Each structure stands twice: as structure tokens, then as C-alpha cells.
Image (cartoon, rainbow, N blue to C red; front, side, top):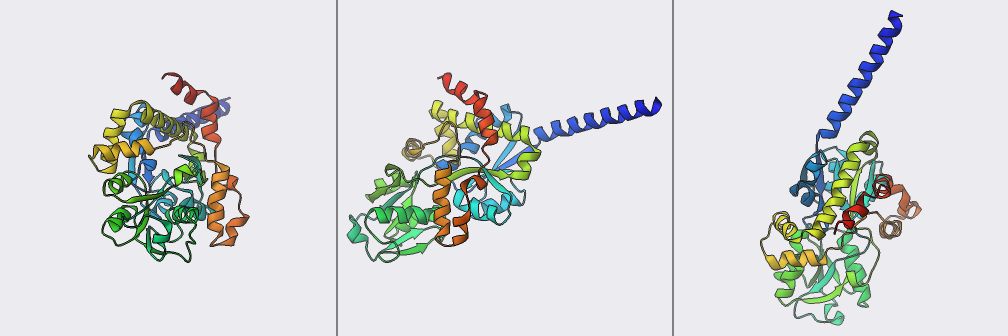
Length: 329
């Protein structure tokens, strides 16, 4: 009898400790990274500044993990979630990096190919230099989409200059270091006010390509299901906040983008196309795989479903939580 009581006490103590540990885990401070200082990566910062994570019982720090650092920071555990392109995520996942898409913030290419004022046509762009970030990345594939739309062969008709950073592309165009580049808001406003030519707005073409995704690690999601649900709730609320509370959103975006230019902020806000239910789309992920396969045929053997974990978002969706948000308006 004493042995049974002792066993029961041990089990209860273990359960209590486990529950306590789980409760502590749910309230621990987590970090969310973002790969670029652009509106498409702003939702976690917006949700943090608006107090939405805090209202979900989470302490969140949002940090920049630029470019190729983004998946590495996630794998190393320096951040628990991250906003990055599928182009960055997929190769690391294939190499056993344990990273997965929980959601995404759009399924179409959205950048704009912009040239200097003296270059008004595709013919005038021939033989010129197009500025990009890094070889083979999402900016390059966007540029290639746009150039082909103009009837140009990206491999023969132009030269690419890799600048290394999203923030350097507008200055390179402004100072005539390059003849054209692909830009996103708020730099599109600066280009327009400077008289540059907008050759192709890719958002008009509805070309599928999985850009910004919400990523985490499979193991982290498995070990922290409640925390993951809270993060997704805050992210969904962040998208709703973006559209329903414009003035507050613009104030937060001013901090995130480090600009007080009202017109630039309005430009970024106007061009944003966040889905209310931010699912990653298999056809858009397939387009990214096709792009990667152009340089490495091994990617042609992979399937989009390998890189998507939609379960936590689908659970939130089925609960009616997101629909109720928009029913308030």
C-alpha cells in the first residue's frame, strides 16, 4: 500500500513538474527574426509593437537576421521563428536543417523593375547593367521574370551586378552605378519622385512565386505546440491590425523602416497584400523549386509538401478565430 501511495505521489509530482515546466515554457521570451527591412517582413514587428504577442502571453523580441543569415540563425536556435523567402528556406531544409514553413505572406512576385529616366524601353536597356542583391536569389528571379516579360534574354541582353543588400539597390540606381534594378516600397516612391521609369510591376502579372514565409523548426513546433499556436494567433491579429488600424500601423512602420517620410510609408502600405489566412501555397512553392532546379537539378525531385507544415494554421482557421476577427469590422 505504501509502495502504491509512493508511486502515485511520484506520478503526481512528475505531472505537476511537467505542467509547471510547460507553463514556464509558454511564457518564456522568444525571438523572431526577419530577413529584410521591407513591409512584407513587418508583421511580427507590428504585432510586437502593438502588444499582440503580450496579449497572447508571450514575450517576444523581433530582430533582423539579414539575407542568408536568416535560416542559419533559425537552425542555431538564435531565433525561434523567422520571416524569410522560400528561396532561402528550401536549400537549408534539404540539407537537413529542420526548417519548415508555417505560413506565408503572399503567393505572387511583387517587385518592380525600374530603370533610370533616360532608359524608357526594353531596347534601351540592352547591354546595360541591372543591379541585384545576390546571385540566384529572389531579386534575381524577379528581375528575370520582368526582363523576359519585356522580351529580353536575361543571360544575353543585360549584365547583372550583385550589390549584396536590399538597401543598396536604390542608391546604386540613383548614382548611376546600375541602369535598372528591382525595388519594393518605400524605395519605389523615391524612384517615382526622381523621375525613374517603371518598366514592369510584377504584381500586375500574377506570377506565382513563394516570397515571404513564416518559418520555424520542426522540432521546436513539435515541442512547443501551444506556443506555436499563440504565435500564429498574434500573427493573424497583426495582419488584421495592419488593415483595420491604419494610422497606428503607419506609425509602427515608420520605426520598422526607419523613415518618417509619410509618402513612402503610404506607398508601402498601399502595395502590401497580406492574406487574412497566411497559408503557404504549394503551387507558389513549386515555382520556387523550379527556380532552384535551374541551378541544381536535385531540387526538381522535391515536392512542395516537404517544406510546408500547415497544421497549426489550419487548426487556428478551423476554430473560426480568423473569421471572427474580420467579422468585427
